[in-house]
Amino acid sequence: MNNPFKQLEPIDLNRKSSRGWVETSCDLTGDCSSGVEAGFLSLSLSRSKIIGFFAVIFLIIGVLLVKSFYLQIISGNKYYALAENNRIKVDYNKAHRGIFVDRNGKVLVNNLFGFTISLLPADLPKAADKKEQQLRDLAAIIGLPYEEITARLVGSEKRFFQPILLRAGIPYDQAMIIKIKAEELPGVELSVDAWRLYPYSESMSHLLGYIGKIDSDEYQKLSADYLLDDNIGKAGLEQQYETRLKGVNGETRVEVDALGRRKKIISQSQPVAGSNIVLSIDVDLQEKLYAIFKEKIPTGRGAAIVTNCSNGEILALVDYPSYDNNLFTGGISQTEYKKLLDDERKPLFGRAIFGEYPSGSTVKIVMSSGALQEGIVTKNTTVNSTGGLHVGQWTFPDWKAGGHGVTNVTKAIAMSVNTFFYYIGGGYGDFKGLGIDKIVKYFKMFGLGEKTGIDLPGERKGFVPTPEWKKNVRNEVWYIGDTYHVSIGQGDLLVTPLQVNNYTVAVANGGHLLTPHLAIGSVDASGNKQLFNYPEIRDVAVSAENLKIVREGMRETVTAGSAQSLKNIPVAVAGKTGTAQWSETKNNHAWFTAFAPYDNPNFCITVLVEEGGEGSSIAVPIAREALQWWFSGKK
Figure (cartoon, rainbow, N blue to C red):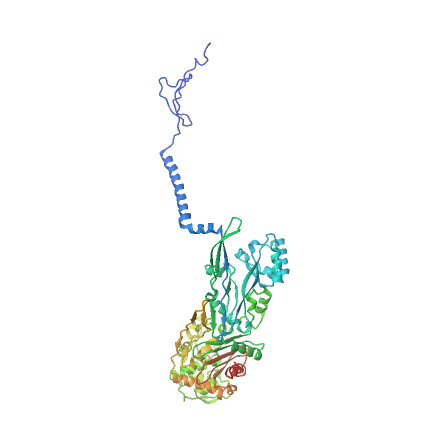
């Protein structure tokens, strides 16, 4: 039989194919070895490709090593804690917040415990209709308008996982309804919490302030020591002494299984109550002074401060009108808050330390001190008051038509003679006055234009005008009229009632400008007492003899001047009235500042009545009742 392949020539396969393969040379009978060297089948790789391949491998290994180092070494503690949290639950036992007591031990605030309702935005129904229905059901249970609940949720996307307080002090029956319907009310949290009860809410509100739930900004600053649902001081002394009042929360660490069931207690620490703060306030005087304002100016506005002249302790600090701080501690409603904001008397505004007013004639005791010290006048120097001064086309009047006649420094203080202070401030004719630079020097020496350092947040510092300020801000030159105005407490000069009280204290005690303060000390949970130290601001550079002359003028105010209604007080009183013009269409502000007993002062009172008119007609009677009550032994 003929072989069909016999006529074919052998094919040379010993060559590169188009695919890069190297093949052996074989004949068609399958013999690949006869006279031909055997070949092999392989992949052709260049040196650069091999190096690139291993570089990629090493890069991947390096990344894995770096990531492993970061996870295990650098962030090991973090992820260990996260892993532990999967099996360990921490329960917090909140510490009791410290309280305030007055100088006689009377309790000014109480801690109450009860049910609190909060919303957790993250757990509320996502469907709008279901969410609305649930919130309406909740509103019906707790008696809070639906609109107020939704208003609380405005901006909740910024604190999605933080509870939003709706109401504290929920009655037991409401709490039980919510507990029973818990599955029907996702995102509604019922908890036992503490809040404050302020028994002297109206008279003490501006002093004590109030507490509220910590917000996101506060939590970011204080997160190391606070929980997301903690209460925190929001205003007044509650805010000022937050770190002392707070205490330390207790912790119970419990091991739980995969289903969250408790297995055993791992560790436990007891809470440590916050420190109690002892105030210098006499709450009976505080209440009395507030009641006097309520009686004398029921629809008016004002402030009063009473300070111990020897040490700067504040015995009373009243802002009128006030508000009920109990409204805030459990979460004030929008309706109640709007009512306070819309009140034209501004009950939320603390006038004693925030209000800035022209000082009126009360500043004349500082002017007199400076003029005596600089030798501008002596006790016997006199000026003839004929009704005012005339400079060119301008007239600078006295308050009394025709003037007060021949006047020395004590009469000028007692009768509040403007002409005398125009002379000693800006000078007139051949009489050389202090001039604005020295006036500013003594104003600042007595604490004007700076904060007193009182232990309350937000104190204002008033304003002392200067020629430089007027040039830079108003692009105007300083005129002699500006100096005259400042010399009688008008023009651009602004003071707070607390500053007026403080420079009165300095005159009364012989030249010691003290730091006014409200807190005397604290007592911690173990009974350890700590007295607070308040350094003297400075001694004013006015001699004892010159300050004595000023005090004589203030005493003459009572015996023969604008405050003669105080002559019947059981002790000798010295003071200075003031009437401050501030508007062409509204009444003047009324001032009175005084100290007693005259020979050994320990009681300094300053009264401001906004738009009250003459200081002698409204501010003096308020001070008189307080002085009469205090020194008659009724306290």
